[in-house]
Each structure stands twice: as C-alpha cells, then as structure tokens.
Length: 205
Ligand code: SAH
Ligand code: MG
Image 1 (cartoon, rainbow, N blue to C red):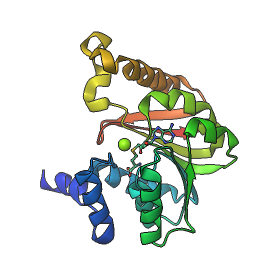
Image 2: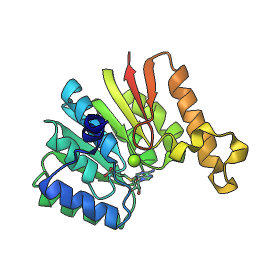
Image 3: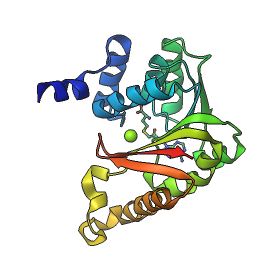
C-alpha cells in the first residue's frame, strides 16, 4: 500500500540526507528508513531530555535524534577511525553542546556513567549486548525506554543454530541470550518488532 510505503520511506532532507547518503556510500551501518520512522514516533511520544546511545559510527543517528527532539545525546564510539569523523559531523551540525561523544569501549565506559537517561539507543557490537545490559538497565529512569537495533540479524535469529554459519554462531547465541534476558526480565516490558533489521522496545516498569 502506497501510504504504508510512504511512512517507511519518507526520509530526512537537507544536510541530514546528504550525511545519510555518505554513510551508505561508505558502508557505515546507519539506521534504516523504517527505523528512523519509528524512532521519530518514539521521540515524539517520550520527549526525552537525556538520551544515551551506544554506537555513534559517524554521528548520523545522534544528529537525527537531536533533530527530532530537544534531548541531549551522550554517545559512545570505540572505532578510532570513526571518532574524528563523528566529531566533524557534530561540528558541522553545530550540535557540540547537545551531543557528547565519549571515546572508548562501551563495556568500560558504561559502569562509570551515572545518567540517568530517559531513552537509551543500543546500536553497537551485537555480541556485547548481554554485557551492556546490567548498566543500561541501571542507567534508565523508571518508565524510560530502551531501543535495541539489529536484533533480527537479517532474519537469522529465527533460524536454528545449525542453519547459521559457524562464524556467526557466537553472535547468534549471544543475541538470543540478550533477547531472552529482556523478555524474561520482570522489571521491563518488552516487544520485538521486525522493523528495519529488527529492533526491541523495552520500558522499565
Ligand atoms: N548508530 C549509528 C550506527 C552505529 S554502527 C547510526 O545509526 O548512525 C555501530 C557502531 O558501534 C560502530 O561504529 C562500532 O565501531 C561501534 N561499536 C561497536 N562495539 C562498540 C563498543 N563496545 N563500544 C563502543 N562502540 C562500539
Ligand atoms: Mg543499527
């Protein structure tokens, strides 16, 4: 249906569109259009003031979240090559006072943060989600929302482990472990959506 397609494909414009295009050309795994659409709804509904993002890449989703909310974004990136690029993006959008880029491994940085954040967007190394979870949960305010991207792994997460190529099995196992953690956590209410590369939405009770 056209109207359905529009909701999913209506993208960003201007400088943000140019940045998105560059990311795709350089194989930077930025949030997909359907994910953007959903994030905009979440931002409009929740109106966060403090967002934590794990996985900056070169800053597209940070700038995106600032564009569609009044939030400040704290974002973590550990890939040396991408950090200066992310800084350039933040400066180009004049968002230095709203986006705080923390350089290093989220696993090391998360325990030192105090937050709290009313929204957390997890979009980093998928195999590490279970390790991040304890801190992420601690850093979330009551009724705060946790959005985790790329949980369906191109649909592979639904396959049995024997269908999954050997080199992907560890990530497959850890992602299943993460989804299990989320779904069985009585402090959180979670749903899984086949949007983009799959994402989960969890609200802290
Ligand atoms: N959110 C971005 C895309 C992030 S891609 C956007 O949509 O625009 C995932 C990023 O997470 C990569 O740049 C990768 O280097 C980073 N990453 C992976 N594991 C990490 C870790 N443990 N700590 C910090 N960053 C990590
Ligand atoms: Mg992603």
